[in-house]
Image 1 (tube, chains in turn yellow, red):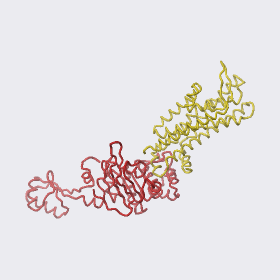
Image 2 (cartoon, helix red, strand yellow):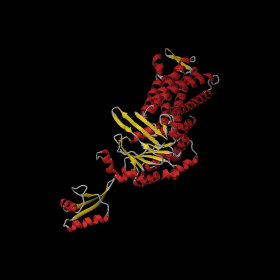
Image 3 (cartoon, helix red, strand yellow):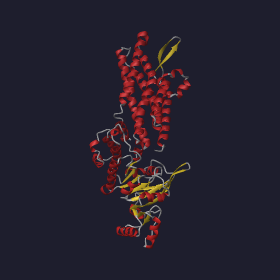
Length: 250
Length: 310
């Protein structure tokens, strides 16, 4: 398994995955920070860490599914392009282990994205001199929620990327996920539970409460039930994908 | 079907190997027998079931029926041990186009857990050592094919399964690959199972032949036997074939066939010259004398019972 995981990282060299991730992340963070800066300028009451955490969480609903689709697609597509599945399987590589190696590799890269987000959020907060020090607990909850949601989204994307050779399909799903993630707040709560992309906001430590023409940010309690649901969906999608892909004839 | 004799330890042995999709029999009760050190030519037209059979041998497809034994072990029970001793190139070569030839080899090296020396040796054998730092997607088709063979060779397996290894190559490339394959059993003690739809290829490389048509193995035997069974005939075209046939019959020459040409089972040049002299002296002009060798293709068409293109 260690060999396969090491090989996954070896195989993605020159695939420009890092550049693509950084580009999308740059757009997301620039957009978010400009939006937060304007919000603080208009309403100094919003000058808090809650604003930063909520904004990035909601932006993640749009951007993380797209970044995930790109990363997973790049990792999986190389096996289709070079017809390497048959070579690997004929070399006694377990398809289940290969599937797991790809999943771990993709999530390790996406965890890197989340870590960079946290670092940039702290940097932004310090530059803007937001009251209090960086809220470690909230930031950890943010990172944890993002990671759990990403696990489920990755499981779905990997299934599609490996089962369907044409990666346009997987990338379209990523964009659709981004659209759902962005508009998640408009869906009824019950519907949101089924749409994994909405979990970026639902697992955020900060939420937004509308009150007539204005609203305010508030810290929501840790949603262990939702976290468990995200894990359950990730496990379900991962196993369904693995079962399907490893049984396909080559 | 001419079956070759069973030896104590066949490298590959299938019994009733079948693969069906609905009512379509892609492979139908194939009993393949590949002995150690052989270059087994698996011959058949496109769509005959060659690749499907080879894929089943590598565990890429599950047989609908039948058993596969390789190195004396059952594939379904000892897949891992068998594949460790088997190298393969199925259909088109597999490679990571964005990686260099050497990096592709490194992947196989780590999967096979073999030393650097093997990588260098395999690249040297296929003469890619000077192109190893070039991206595989920039390789020509022949180079990709050679890279595929090098990747199959990296662990210097006991059995090498090559599916149409000369596909898409130019004549020079075909010759190069052919010589390479022919050298492997003696140099590295390998057994080669090679599929092709090109009869001339198999004729030049293989020591044993299996002919498959519409999923059925219609012939299996040594190339030597096959060559003996193909025969050489002399064809005569004269100014009056009927008159020539009647005359030659009186002289003790019985044609195998007649029509546009008279066909004789002769190989001796002196006898042919004598026949020519007699015909000319009898006033029958001899227009053409040709030697016609019954090729493997003719044999194949006889075996499959149809004159379809390969």
